[in-house]
Image (cartoon, rainbow, N blue to C red; front, side, top):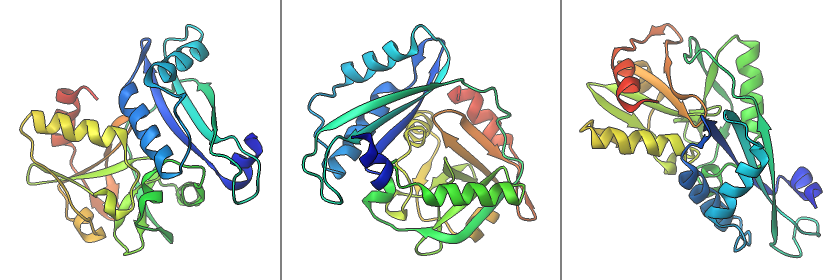
Length: 249
């Protein structure tokens, strides 16, 4: 029944980092997966956190460092309307690349925009905007691109949450702005608050990004990625370097 996921994008996925044999933030990934499955009305009673972890460990086959893609899909016949909401999953294992964790040139993709609703908050198979944004970034020699929402404000980057630093406060768009409900976003916010660093979720405009002291991106694989430039603006990375060191991300 995987054809349904291929034809309709009727699937969810989690991209998970395994480092030194540890499945990083396993419970956060699992909780997001189940919350997203509820939005799509998947039947997930057979998938528990214990099963989720055990299935990943089994697929790793002793591998200590990896990038894991956990795909949950509706296992049903039918065309647009499924005949059931039963689910199955598939797990893929990739090498964990050693990448340069800095975004030297950040662009803005504006040809298509994200809607501001719950479907925009989940990691589903409907990812064409990210594919096109990735192609745009490659064509223009950007390391990443910001994606706009239907209001023309900043939603996120291609595979990352965006944060800006202004006056020592962290700002990032709320879910109502159409961004994916990022696991690393929650980790950064939680740890920053524990350290007494003020963090606010507010709508962000392009002008606010350009007016920021510093800008960084976050995702589950790379952690915190400083942004060096956007258009003609050059950002500092002093606060971000300290934050990365303190949070160990």
